[in-house]
Image (cartoon, rainbow, N blue to C red; front, side, top):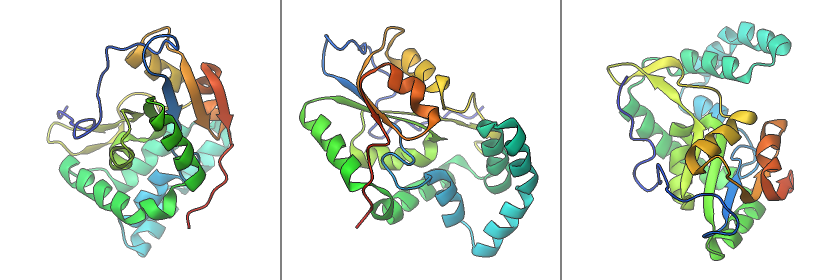
Length: 223
């Protein structure tokens, strides 16, 4: 497995601090897609990086996976299918460059202004800000660095021994209970959040460990 440097370059990959509300700065978690942004960043990235016809053909090939999702509701499975279709074999360095270019190009059209206002409000209070997302961390990382996030927790892509996308996820899809498991692995079993913000059922478990629960409170659209 190729060594990955995703959380370097401005993001803290580990922290000795706990999430205790009574010790240290408050810990605040934001979902990314649909919460900080107006749409799913990963599907937008997959469409952005290829020509329209290639995207159309890829979506046609994903039709069986989409049908299977109707029955099994396995988001990790359909995400892995999209990774195989659109990203398998892409070198990690190339994918990181493309993710940076995508963030630079699309950030103004993705972020919700009211969500950013709350992000900045917590930052002004000295909070530790963590993005917890089901999207691949390699795609969200440039956005997280741009926001000045203290931590990014996301789904991980598997890479082969040549540093190319293998075509599946490295570990579980970071959604639902997995978000809390990843927070616990990072900040300790007794992690508690001063606030958490999300917009789908996949955020409910994370919201349950937060003092302030912000569910679908952001409605702003990019200017």
